[in-house]
Image (cartoon, each protein chain N blue to C red):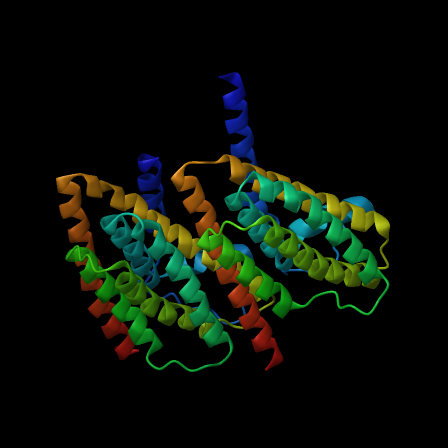
Length: 196
Length: 208
């Protein structure tokens, strides 16, 4: 099971494209389009994977509680975006999520479960709002939404799959290095956001 | 040993079918009846699988029953299809819409959240949820049937599909006892709840 998760994680991350998880106008249609959308940009991918990595570091119940919290709160952020409720600094929040979650993984931080869930939930709102406010009406948002919720959850699963290396000393070091890499990407995404 | 392999193969096949369902969904999440071209009964049989607004709360309720235990699955397998059929017959009489995105979204949100929380529902709660869900979704189907000038054959097909989904999902769910199985069902419930919330968001956006 761990080998399958690790393999799936590597394949999924390798399929990612440039760091722009923004939707092209008029293309919010179909499950497949929605599924591909979160995979189309590193800013979204690294944050989703970091949630899975951190959950794996923390172990049960955070192992599944964090990947359950993120899609739910992300959907709330999406609801706010769709309803037209403004959320200032959405893209900055998305960029900072990579920095924040990456730091947590790098430091192997072990806050109480409620604090970890609160941090993950805070970042999830920004991700969801970015999706919800950027999506064009398109033909059908529901199947599209099903696609990107599923992709988000599977990205978490990839993070958990990679995180199984946590059981070995070298694996724990590797995870913390992954976290450092994700945290380093955060300022790059932030610079790209501010420069655009 | 052969029996255990057969059960494992059956579960794997069920999981593969339900995982592939999203790829079979049309580009639009129809609440209206689709004509599959094989007669009214098969139109009804296919309808829940082609209508994401109805499939999501149905799956969530079946997951709730699977997490609660065998008694919940048996209860749901009786009450939900029966209520659904009676409500669709009532809806066929007229006066009900073919779709209600906010309603189906709210159902998905509530039932998905219940599954995500892994709540062990008492029997009366299962009956109540089955009746409420069956009534609401059945009335919507009745409205869709009236719009499509469809008859009892479609209702019969829908009812059997609903019963099959409950038996497969709740039955498998109740028999899976390892912790990661239950976690996977709860995660699936959270996805359905997320989808329900987004569905409400899309409905709000459509009103603006």
